[in-house]
Length: 113
Image (cartoon, rainbow, N blue to C red):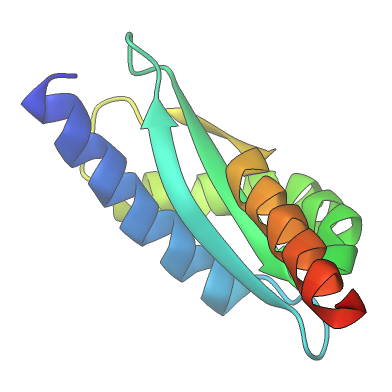
């Protein structure tokens, strides 16, 4: 990955995470985290990976973000000084979901002993 792509990933991560925390409401007790951002090779798309606590709220969070994507994209375009701002799309961070499941299994094993 080029240095420019790494910098763009980091910039988009910071900006999108900030916009989500300020502009999108997920309800009481729900914490949404942007884990990382991956920009496509041609810089036309940015895949924003998210996770949330509690993990049972993931479907509602994902739907809320899909509905707010247009507004987030608009605010991102206004904020960034770029000729072309990558089109964002949200993805569930499967790595975090898998880690949560493994942790739950380990906890169940310890509780049954």
